[in-house]
Image 1 (tube, rainbow, N blue to C red):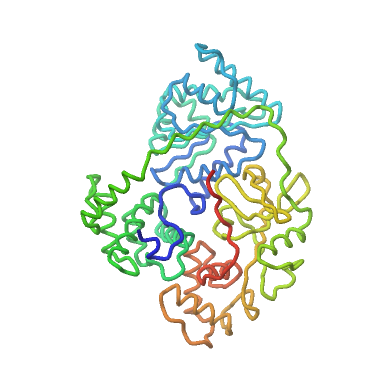
Image 2: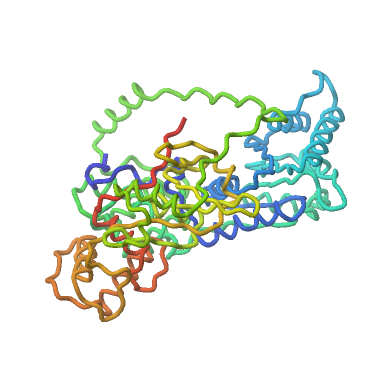
Length: 509
């Protein structure tokens, strides 16, 4: 209802897991690092816990993106299983031929062990991810421990990642599970966002949704949002979504503290009791919405289970890579409507930004980029034009090819090159004391973002403007140094509505 009112491309606070809205706080990055460390350390168990809605699934999705090509993944998300059902699920996920019906547990374990040995002989590692692992029965956890008994002199042949709510830690502290607890080689508890991270998270989602003017959720409200939501991302989404709806209903430009408090009462209720009826909607409107939902909504059909992958897959088509950075630069420049052979050496209008960025930061940058991808000792280059949680568009000679992220994510060199557009008189960086057309333009964009009239030209890049830039950088998750460099120019262009190519999330199949 409020999307058009605030001139948004999408609803910014949906609780659906859209990779385009991915925000990785420092603690999410630490959790991801623990998972990656565990996989590279030679086997055993890795434990990731956190409150409901803290972002465990987000971290898991990012981890899946970055596992090496020689790593086979299995994912179990419904762990309320008996021991035979667990073993059957493992076989199904890995595509292992199952024993005849009625075969006992030993037959399943033997089949899994034979599969693990075959993978080891072919240089493949196996990772089993179990989500909602707090629902595992003790006897199932013990069977998982037994599956990790198979090992070589260097490593165990099965790595198991347990993801669950905080009570999972208590379960593993029980005396009967001491042997399993001793095999946990990395563990991390994902806590809530801090107040500063909550503010950055909210502004990040608004920016991705296309906010171009003053934010409808002002920074002054963020401590209240953090306190009411507890810093849990899912609760932040619920609260902010309802607060925007209330702001729209009151025909305001921005939420107030009263609106946020009433939104919290609506979505969270009072000490767990059923929440009240939406305070800003008339009963007739509620009835109409319910009727429309009943007519339009139908339960989704269960997703078909992917067929088990054969052990020996045909070789995939080669990635569309360039042998030289210059050729990749030319491809990237065409996306910007220029045939410049080397846009980074002719910066009359287009400018080049080179930096070391993760996939998460590339998503936030939201524009096509040139990537370095290593093939053995050789460095080749790709032009990335689309990205979601599992797939990417790579472009070569005007043709886009859809490829799984897992095919190249682990081989990224880390260096990224992108382009940004500015007026010819603009400098690559602004520092204290600078003045000119570029300083005046920055002042005008900052004023627009804050809902103020543009100031008169002839300004200096003084302490007040630097403070405004630092706030903008902090809101966008950038280094808040007050210096207008390439990534800050790019964010300013987004706020100003400059027409530039964007890195679009891919449509779901």
